Each structure stands twice: as structure tokens, then as C-alpha cells.
Amino acid sequence: MNLKKKNIDEKPMTILITGANGMLGEECTKLLSDTYTVVASDIHASSLMPDSIIYKQLDITNESHVHEIINRFHPEVVVNCAAYTDVDGAEQDKESAWAVNVGGVQNIVEALKKTGGAIIHISTDYVFDGTAGPYGEDVKPNPVNYYGKTKLESEKVLLDSQIPWTIIRTNILFGNTSHQQASFVRWVVEKLSRFENISIVNDQFGNPTWSYGLAMAIYKIIESGKHGLYHYAGKDYINRFEFGLKIAGIYGLDPTLIRKTTTRALNQPANRPFKSGLTCERIEYELAVTIYSVNEALTAMRGNT
Ligand SMILES: NC(=O)c1ccc[n+]([C@@H]2O[C@H](COP(=O)([O-])OP(=O)(O)OC[C@H]3O[C@@H](n4cnc5c(N)ncnc54)[C@H](OP(=O)(O)O)[C@@H]3O)[C@@H](O)[C@H]2O)c1
Image (cartoon, rainbow, N blue to C red; front, side, top):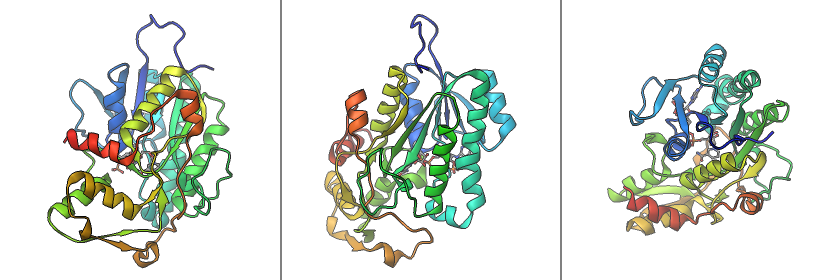
């Protein structure tokens, strides 16, 4: 089934965005509302959305409420940006991580079976073990932590769903966001602006991804009506320490305040994939999306703050 409406003269599609207060959800809400009727939703009662956006509180683990909202608005597409994203927290509270990342997706799928809509779901490079990245879509997943397991399971829910689905895996998202805890860039900028030293690991590799670029890729998927599994990530394959140095460089801050550390020294509850990240030839070839370098993205972000 094609995600795109057959008759472009019909009223614009309605897109339900879950997790709309989060980093990607906020970016998708801003971008997609230029073209579509967007219903933004998140677990929280309040939101920083402009009044022009329809905002509904929606906990995706609440089955009956998910059905009610999807029945009421009949979205042609649900963009599922809601997730339990605390990688270490997931190790300690497995039940909550599973309920959101797997149960929540099941609830959306079951509701969409009744209304006939499609889902675009966001997954992660953490479905891989990080021994041989960057990874293409055809590599067999093998998660090393519970968060990665729940995200892989969420993908399986869609594979078995018999509704039109698109999965986009991404990694190390960054962007201008109102979501305080979510921003690595803001953390680095704030610390270095106060001349504080920070330590960043130099043994976790990936390709940092501008949330605006991913939101544009999601827009292109909706417009094209494509579905299936895609990877979308940034141009630079670097470690987190190098990412920190790029942030210091673009924001004119002192890079010598950044010290190298190792994942082992942090002693976090969840294992991390080390050589992770994603290759994006499929989505570049099929949808002509733009893949941004970290410096391109940071330069644009700096101009917008
Ligand atoms: N950030 C990354 O580096 C990264 C990398 C790879 C893949 N991804 C994936 O990309 C997607 C978006 O990530 P993000 O960074 O934008 O995440 P985020 O900033 O943590 O946003 C997720 C949003 O979902 C909300 N939420 C949590 N539980 C919910 C529930 N039960 N019902 C409805 N909303 C709920 C969160 O609220 P709370 O903040 O209160 O929990 C938050 O507002 C996720 O699927 C994530 O797995 C992210």
C-alpha cells in the first residue's frame, strides 16, 4: 500500500506525532505542520508547542487512549517518536522500557489496523553489537543492552503487523531542542562557556545525526509513500570526543577543556556498542535525502539560537 494519498486535491493528510515534546518529535512537528494537519502528542500534559498546533496528552502505553486518539483523528500516518530513551535506565527498569518501546508500538499498530493508517517508526543503531560498524540495513542485529533489545523487538512488531510500515534507524541525534536533558550540544556549550572541564569518551564511534535532517527524511518518506527499512545518519564517522571538539570549534569555545575518557571508566549500567553507526546509501539513493556533516548542522544550529 502506498502511504501517499491518491488524490492530491483531497484535504491534506493528518499526521499524528507521538513523543512530540522530545528532540525528534519537536523537529518533526515544526517541519511537518507546514504541509500537513499535525496532531502532536506526548506523555506530558503540557507542551511548548505554538497554539496553532493541535496538542494532545497521549501515553502510548495506554491502549484505550491510543485507540481513542487514532479513532478520533484518523491519521493517515503516525510518526512514532515516543520512546523510553534512557539507555542506562532501561537496564534497571526493564518493565518500563519494554512497556513503552514494545507495548506502545503494539498499541499503535492495533489501532491503525482498524483505521487503515501507516506508521513511521524510529529505531536505533543500538540494535547492533558495535563490533563492525557502520552498519547497513542488511546486517543481522545483535543488541548488547536492554534498550537495544526493546528497539529490535519494536521492529519485529512492525514486521509482523500487516500494516504499512517504515522503520528508520538513526544514531546520536542532536539538534536545537526545548527538551533540556536531551541535548549533548547544549551540555558541551554550557560547560565550556563556563570554562568547566568535561570528559567525553573516545571509544564510542558513530555518525552524529542532525534531527532536522532526519525530520526532512521523514517528510520525504511521507511524500514518496515509500515504506520498508532505512538507515538515516550524518556524514562524519567519529567518536564522541571528536564530536565534542567539533562543537567547541563551531561555537568558538576552548577545546582544551575537553578531556578524553573511556567507556570503561564511566562504569555505566548498560553496555555500549563501540564501533557502531549506520550507512545510508539506501535512503540516499531512493529518496535523495541530504546527509549533513556535523559542521554543517552545527553552523546552521548556531545561526538559529
Ligand atoms: N537521541 C538519540 O541519540 C537517538 C539515537 C537513535 C535512535 N533514537 C530514537 O529516536 C526516537 C526519538 O528520540 P529522541 O532523542 O527524540 O527522544 P526523546 O528526546 O527522549 O523524546 C522522546 C519523547 O517521548 C516521550 N515519552 C516517553 N514515554 C512516553 C510514552 N509512554 N508515551 C508518549 N510519550 C512518551 C518522552 O517523554 P520523557 O522525556 O518524559 O520520557 C519524550 O518527550 C526514539 O525512538 C529513539 O529511540 C534516538
